Length: 216
Image (cartoon, rainbow, N blue to C red; front, side, top):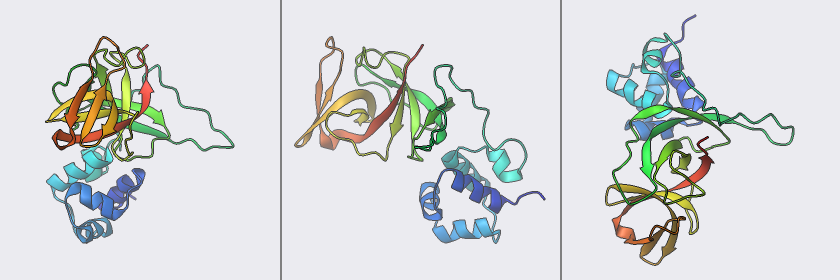
């Protein structure tokens, strides 16, 4: 029997380990409305379908009609390998969207989180909002070089010494961070680049990098 929109919506939500409240917040609806959608009492409109598909990383056509694949075709980079199952630790593989790029150099143009280039496969990333970025520039070399991919976790708390994606006055950069009073120091690992100090009030966000995929 073909599944209903409500059943597919619930499947998409549960695939991202989100409860109804979390998905409702991310899509801008009240929880009761989402509950009615999942029960089949109401049907979400096209705008809601698009938002839900974007948040859960499923195909809008599949969510609306049940036809086609649930996920877009995923190509695993050659230098990323699934880890073998371990009797001591259960590994969870996740397909994360790879969006635009982030400068490892001077603070520069923003990346665009709504534009997904393709997906990368990683292990044990628990943040449902995590995503990947391709690095541009060499201010973080040799540890992180031009063309490498970093996995960013907006939910992970950033501390001094962490490498983070930082948005300063609507511009982005990848740097090691140090928090000091009302200021944040953005520190490159490459000695050829100078550190930058910015006021916390000028920071839009500081998102922690939790994994690195090296360019072969």
